[in-house]
Image (cartoon, rainbow, N blue to C red; front, side, top):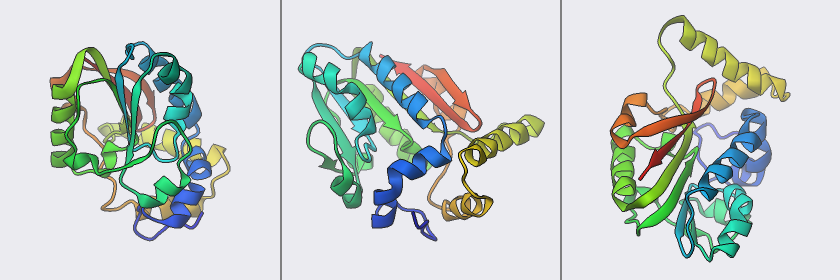
Length: 216
């Protein structure tokens, strides 16, 4: 995959190479995808509604497909990249929407997998507020995202853990640096302080990436 100078998912090369690229950059991607699906099944009710925000090529939806079918669930795979729609293979019809401007119907589960970090803090605060307001009692919001580095030496340790994970999959140092520099201005890691007001519980962490569940 050719890494663009300025990172965007609205790029044919990125969309076509996404599935391989994300697994090279994030060696825990499949493990965490399975964990997200496992958690989600515990909150999806009969005739319920699920949002997959930043659905990309359909990874999460395909892991949930049996549950969606068996429980007659209304599933909304949402992404703002036309190029991703062309690559999407999953349940329900891809919805080409920008979640920053969406109004959500009451839902059982909303999943944001590596999505919020591509918004400004003010934008994702609005999105999180709208999600919390629309979550049904007993529902859940599941978030997996890159977090701001820890302070001090531990921050250095965690950053190196992320780099070690990437090099372990065979990604070259040049590609790692090129990708990091392409993310300047496009990716803004989340801060832990953005989540406490929504009663978030951490369920996963690897390097600078973490997973959280907000319960309704």
